[in-house]
Amino acid sequence: NATDPANVFGGEFAGVETPRFARLPSTVVAIRRGWPLMLFEEGGAQITALPGAEPDDISRAVEAYLARPFAPRRVVVTRWNDEPVLRSPGEPILRALGFQSTPSALEWWPAPA
Image: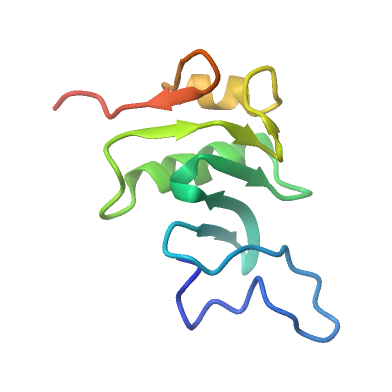
């Protein structure tokens, strides 16, 4: 979670290039090998794959985001890398994970148990 005091990313540190994001409870940072890989903002409505993120890593980060403790039962993604999610590079990744189309977004519900 972006509000975790141990999270050193998103701030200003001399000589360290990190993505900027709001330190809100609705923001989650996926970290791989000690560096930010993905940002999930506004409860997952906006997803940002950071430069250098490989498709397999992106897919695993989204799966981990959806499976985290206390995750919402429904996620609606409207933006991918600051563009509409529909027809974005993220659309096929999200569809492969079970996201379905709405008129202006991609929506995910967990599979019934």
